Amino acid sequence: MNNTTKISCTIGTTNSAAKLGLEIWLDDKQLFDTNHVSDQQLEWAINEDEADHELRFIMKNKTTEHTQVDEHGKIIQDARITIQNLCFDEIKLGQLVIDLTEYTHDFNGTGATITDKFYGEMGCNGTVSLKFTTPMYIWLLENM
Image (cartoon, one colour):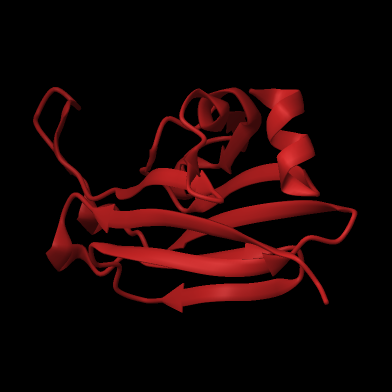
């Protein structure tokens, strides 16, 4: 019998009319794919194999039309994807998300590719990545 652990999160958008896309992958397995993000709770059970894993959130379909700027170049309206309440076995990762995730993007083709911290919102097409190991309880003990 394989033990499983639960991964869950809440996704949403700051502009529901924007039709932003999102894919969620665990290693080489796609868990979720939509071309129009809406507010929803997502949950998956994964095997507790002794292995390294990577959870990836990939924002897609954002265009320059999704961002409005004023005459001074200041953003006055934007469309972003929110990822909140990331939990492993109902334990909120909280600060671990900021400490351990990486957000890689290129400002939707307008700048060089950068890798930065992730603070809960994706504003550019790109990838948020969280690497972890299972068994989950050992990873949580080592990182909390």
